[in-house]
Amino acid sequence: MFTLNARDLATILDQAAPHLFQADDDARDLDALILDCTPGHLHVVACSDRTLAVARTPVAGAVWTAPLAYDDAAALRGWLESSDAVTVEHVITSGHQQLRFTEGNAQLTVPTAPHIDGLPWRELLRLALNARDHATVHGRPVQLSSADLSLWLTAGGNGEAIEFSSLGAAGTVVTAGPDFLGVQTPHGWDGPAPGEGWASSLRTRLFLFRGQFLEVGARYADCTGSAWVVPARPGPGEEPRLISADHAAVALPISQVLAVGKFLVRLPA
View 1 (cartoon, one colour):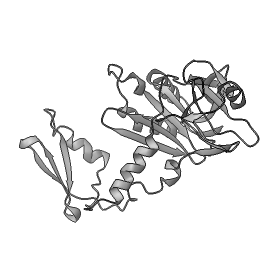
View 2 (cartoon, helix red, strand yellow):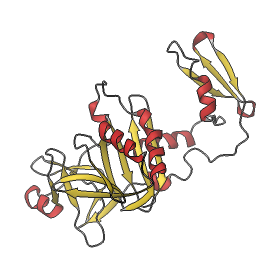
View 3 (cartoon, one colour):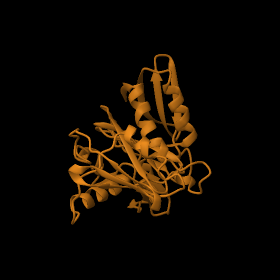
View 4 (cartoon, rainbow, N blue to C red):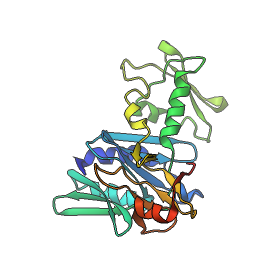
């Protein structure tokens, strides 16, 4: 449980939300925002057919991951409009994983989306950052403000791809199809290197239980073929709980799962 400014939570929701699959897309299993908490940050993750976005804000939280369906994420965003300081709790009640948001006497409880498969966003971002760091040709990063980007939105008015090519200290070339060409002069800011400071967010969230490493957010199968999700890292002295990936409203201590299922095998993401 932790408390944060409602505006900070709304900001990261807004930053990630444009990258959702929309309701009329075929990929319904990605029609969600994933709220992912680590001890240092609360992340909001969204994925579309062409983009992946992760926004974060500092918190002093636990370790858990919870996917929210589009409608529930939208309801949360609307509720934050009239909120100030919001307390966030990750709870498992009657077999359901839920997020509870509280401000004074007002409270919003949002169910998670059990149909959402785990999105390996940490692995994807680590691959992207590694490719950038080991590229054979290094170009100067293209730095654009949101105001800059808005100026180029109509460049591809007929559906053309808008390409930004760095000229180093001279600026950025902008092209869109065969009939549009522009130049963006560079800014004077000296911002952080892309990906700098994200090591803690991208670190694998493993914990050891009775000689076996388990990962928060990962899916496992037992000997009966049943699939289970690890929703959160247990506190000191607590037994991990698993949530069924096959049946809603089933959440059991890991000892009960192993009493029948015998063992757990990590499933591919």
